Image (cartoon, rainbow, N blue to C red; front, side, top):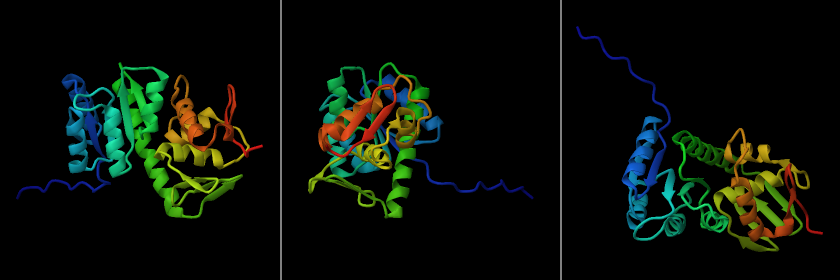
Length: 239
């Protein structure tokens, strides 16, 4: 009699990641590492192929190179976010602040600058996916609403209004605003914000938070977010 193989308990389905990178070696290296970490990974190598693959495979997260043939990563990000909000981790060899802010402004949630370590990339991917899970849990609670001097934040509906006009925020901008709004007027440290919004345990050396604060200020008003140098940020009522 043949002994039956033990059955494995079914867990949650693996997250699906779309890797968009035109350099074959980098694309395959990222794909192989993410697959080794348990993710289901699909690949694309240019702008049009990325948009097609996004519609076909419906990924939970996109790793997206900025410079692509066909059309660039910024255009890919615009097109896929118009179809369905999804966390995007942008890969870039360009470190100019303007380029990074444009990427964040069209819907990218985070970025890593080439050359990067695979360990860092995997950590960023996991942090973004954890943020999505936390955000979904908050929306499910359906009872969070903050109003502060013309700024209205509806956590359940994920909507923001400034002086009665709706303002479009990316998913990460919204989560950052909500974290600041948890204690209006109170300075929230960089480490606390990075942990609550990104799921990181250490914010040392990263400009991600600063870049997102700049894009958030551009949308809700620069004077609504106060900087305390060396400490963090606070959401303020307008004077």
